[in-house]
Amino acid sequence: MAETSKLSCVTVFGGTGFLGGQLVKRLAAEGITVRVAARRPDNAKIDIERSGRAAEIQPIYADVRDETSVALAMDECDAVINALGLMSSVARRHLRQCTNWAR
Image: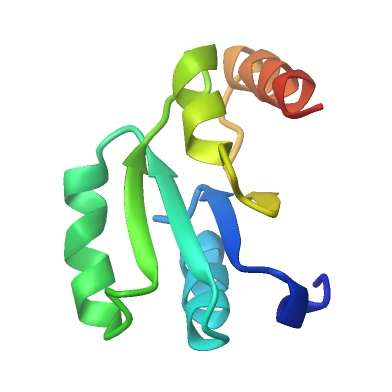
């Protein structure tokens, strides 16, 4: 993990999953604002409220198939973490596109 003291905002793709959810909680515990990029951000709010760190965790709409939503989710953040699970060749193609947009 990068030196967290220099990070103020991190976008996490896959932050509603098991691994991503653990990363989100850890970053929030360090006082970092975490954007949880999700296709259904309203569903993410339930898990966020249970974490006890609602002030540091911000659900935001993003779909890796939509370049604009990905760009907005990453806007003005210091880092991006990809914890998305890959389930198909289509998902892998979208992940490559997301990676290219982040550059």
